[in-house]
Image 1 (cartoon, rainbow, N blue to C red):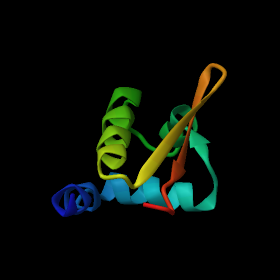
Image 2: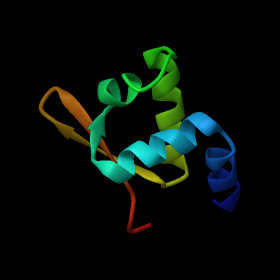
Image 3: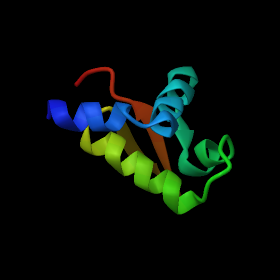
Length: 72
């Protein structure tokens, strides 16, 4: 579990995603708008953050809302 956290934090894009989610919960599209990389790349980064239990996702209709995991 600790290795997952270190891996998640080792990438500057993932650190920036965490900073964005500190401000407010966001969809993957909203997160992607802050970067010059593809949406599949953002999804990959979000997956790593979810596997490290740093980010939570919740489906709301058509959207998936991402938020910081402040509990785990």
